[in-house]
Amino acid sequence: MDSLISTLAIWALPVVLAITLHEAAHGYVARHFGDPTADLAGRITLNPLRHIDPVGTILVPAGILALSSLAGIGGILFGWAKPVPVNFGRLRNPKADMLWVAAAGPFMNLLMALGWAILFRIAMAGEPGDYTLPMMKMADAGMQINAVLMVLNLLPIPPLDGGRIAVSLLPNRLAWGFARLEPYGFPILLVLLFTGVLGTILWPLIAGFRYLLGVIVGI
Image (cartoon, rainbow, N blue to C red; front, side, top):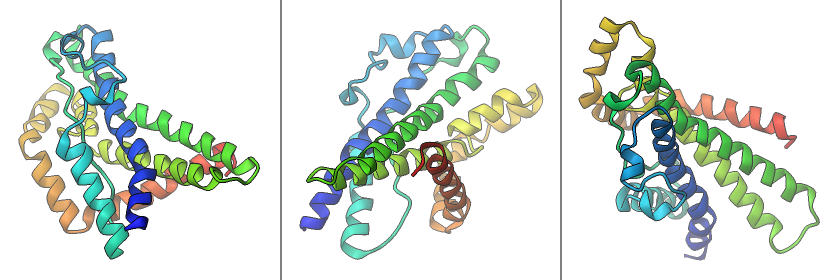
């Protein structure tokens, strides 16, 4: 039980920040390109309480961590926040601007992963103390959850961010046909998850990203 509590304490802040700031970034960029929907809904904020989904932000990540800690069952830690409302029709150039709105979330995860990596480097270089190891563990958790969310969301499956980026980049006829897959996106994702295909795709990409982070900050 102590191990579970310490695991949840280490992962709680990185998970909440990774999920909620990802969503806030979508809203901020949408407002920049002409859609004030998220702003009017009060979703362009650093207050995580405005973004938390009780199931996706708390129960699912906590459940995965609990299984990993108590039963030794590994898995991809992920979660979600309440989706930020975006009306793509109100963007100044809907198809082109969709790319930047969609890319904002993964880009925020990239920035947070880099920030946690720098914190890990600072803690590693400091004098050993009571807070050094917990800080390094939290920073490592921050790098991991942001790497997972960035890579996962860049998969070209609507309605993931990568799917919407693909819709923005494809020629109009192909984009229209590809966008029609959106209602089936999450069922496809679940099939990939439970068949193990998702992990086979994601883990090498996550490991490669973690390696690059290490090279960049010197850890």
